[in-house]
Each structure stands twice: as C-alpha cells, then as structure tokens.
Length: 246
Image 1: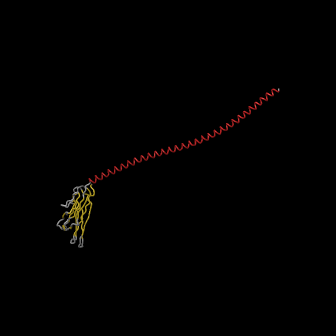
Image 2: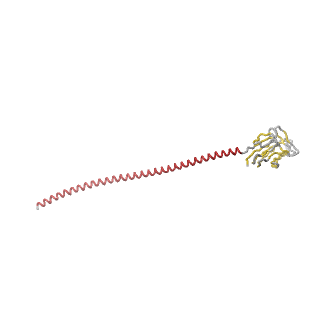
C-alpha cells in the first residue's frame, strides 16, 4: 500500500512536471503566436501601403499615357492643319501668280486707244461757212493706237467697245451764238449750242460714252453760219479713249 502510494506520488509529480512544461510551452506558443500576429499585421500594413502606392503609380502612368496620347493627337492635328495651311498658301500664291499672268495678258492683249487734239496751233477762226462743215483738229498731242486722223478729223474705232468722247470750243467777243454737232458715221449723236448776250469770250464743252463697232467713225461738225476759235492754248479740242473692249 505504501509502495503504491509512493508510486502514485511519483507519477503525480511527473504529471505535474509535464503540466508545467506544457503550460510553459503554451505560454511560449502564445508569445510566438502574438509575435506572428504582429508580424502579420506589419506585413499586412506594408502590403496595403504597397498596394496604395502601386494604385497611385498606375493612376499617374494612366494620366501620363492619356496626356501623351492627347498631346500626340494634338500634335498630329496641328501637323495636319499646318500641311493644309501650307497647301492653301501654295494655292493662293499659285492663284495670285495665275491672276497676275492673266492680268498682264489682258493688259497686253487689250487695245490701247487714246487721243487728244487741239483745233489749231497757229491761232485764228474757222468759219462761218455756208454749209455744215467737218472740223479737223490738226494740233495732235496724243494719238495712242493711231485711231484719230489729223487729216480728216475723224476718229475710227479700232475695236468693238465702249469709248469716252469729249469736245470743247470757244468763240471770241463778236459772236453771240455757238453751235457744235457730234456725229457717229452719218448719224447726229449730240448737238450743243450756247447764246451769250455779253460781248466776251464764251466756252462750250460736253462729253459722252459711245458703244462703237469696229470701224465706226466719230467726228465733229460746225453748223452753217457759226465759227470757232483756237490757238496754242487749245481752247477748242477733240479727245477720247477706249473704256473697255466688248
């Protein structure tokens, strides 16, 4: 009985020792578990921090990519616009060159017609005559195109077109009446007359535009019974020029 009790006491002591060892082991495991939890939390925080950093980095990369893509697209658009503008400028310059060439050709091809002649350079009267008489303006100052004849006093239209014609006349103090007729071919186009009750010089002038066919004749006539005066100052003149061909 005593032996059994001793044996049981020994086993109990051994069990208690084992329990203490187990308790120590549990405590150690708890400590290790606590450290592991702390380490896990630390790494978890690190992972979360890395994930946030990675997300921010990805956001910046996407923003840069979009910006670069937009910038590239914008640059491409600008380049395309620049090409269009350059082409347009080239077309404008080409059109200007063509227009300048066309203008030069038109100016070169366009007949140049202009004349101006005074009635007389020596001075004196013409008229009065018994019949209506053509006036011959012999003091030629300008005769571009040689369409006016100082021999006949007639302007012959060299091309079909619209012409500007002008004339002027003067009489001295003794005459009270002054008349002029402008003819186109055999047709009277314009008649101008003036009466002055005062004994002084009197002037008369007028102008018109005429549509003439090539070869049409324009000239001035002095009616019967009237006279006209001129000298080197060209008081009485006949002139005209081509406005534009048709």
